[in-house]
Length: 504
Image (cartoon, rainbow, N blue to C red; front, side):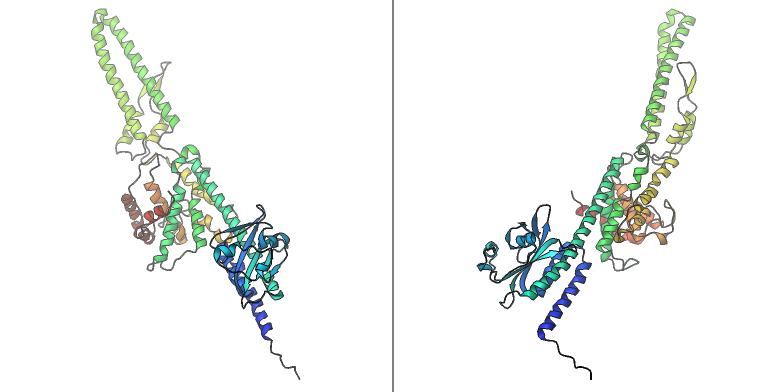
């Protein structure tokens, strides 16, 4: 015959339930990476396992040789204790369990907390938390066993087991925080590097990140249309923020003179042009002096006053014409749209010459200067614009070299597509709209908006908010930008919300 099963005793059932609870909480703790959420979870479970009134958890800071706690139940403030001080400090220092059946009868007990809080401590159980190497990383302290009884050996065993699980979970959470701080530091340093290359766009990356994250958060309240079900977790928002902050990092690979080019001619080219015009002025003056001498020889000294009057008028006219040409060239040099007819005049001016010191004719305007001054919009030639656009490829190659965590692995991909257009006219890949991530679509809107409204660009004036929205609306209507996301951008007043969140 098979032996009949023996019913478990109530104590055994209770112990099994507690052990099961420890296993369950171990799973929960191993999955939680936020220390501010993990620590209260540990205390809640510790209180249940040893059936205490309240618990405190202290983490060991070896560099400062002290314990600190943000989650001491019954206290609203952070507590810091020197190693060896108080019961928790002694447990951290010695690694031994302290179980006190009567707190006020034990000289190690400090009653100051009871006095200040009005709480009455009776029994205390304080155990070390040890990591996988057996090193003490903190302590858990339980107060007042429920039912008015003392903590027993089983409580010590269970709390030690929970403490070991907690130590591993806390170590993982702290490591996770360190990794986050590492990435934050790296991203911040990268933004500093970007802005050091191009000081005129300082703050652009941060503003684009604020705008893009705010737009992503606005989707939480959007219940209609193609993005009704799109929601971003905190980790995905962090991924989007990093991609936005680093979207222009590839500019470190663009030549600085191209990157900060404020006018169509580079400063050294404009200096050369001005010097040539100064030589042309001297040439006109020299030619006038030669004509005066020739006239005196031909007409006699008595005609000198008349000769001077005639030459002064002619020279003034010629110098005024030269100054007008220079003024025209300076106007063409500005990053404004080239007026119709100006290109033809530039070609005509290319025929002007002056005589150098060797009496050789020299062009007043060089072919390369004509080409640069003929740029119809902005300050960049087609070659320079392609070089600027190459920053996206540089960004992607750079970001792809970084060993991102699994949660952040799409940072390079999101940043790579921020200049792509839904109609396939974007750069650098001209990819179709179906392959452009929604995060990149949002960033594109925010990037253009900030570029239009920024007041710190030397090559353009800031566009007013309303006009910037009109420009974005035209691009959305023409199929370049996502019209649904633009509608949310406007409806949720993203610029105002992002500006309100940003630190002053």
